[in-house]
Image (cartoon, rainbow, N blue to C red):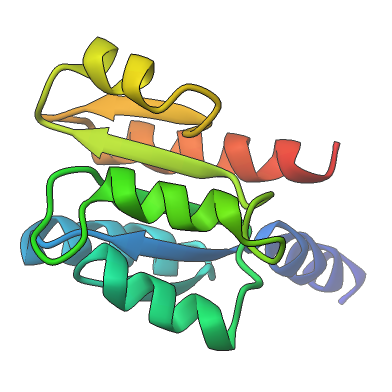
Length: 138
């Protein structure tokens, strides 16, 4: 019984709350399934504007993963809004792009904690999110 308690304690201690922002429903579905398998709480938005609306009511996320090229509000503009708000400026943010990673790295200086190029390995992305979130409080 004691072992089961320690396993559950570790699972819930390591669980995180993540905001996934992407206009690609397939990417969202795959990532959501991977994170939910680990008892992570997942909130999904289809563009930066929708994500900001979620963050107005609940700015408490361990990590945000956002596509860069999206309709309505892209990931770069979304990042700018995140960094302007005292409530969201410290949330670790991972940018995902099919474009030139170096271009976006230069364009978003002091912005994304990590930038990942597509196509990507979803499990590597999951591990990056866990690692990035764990550094949030260190």
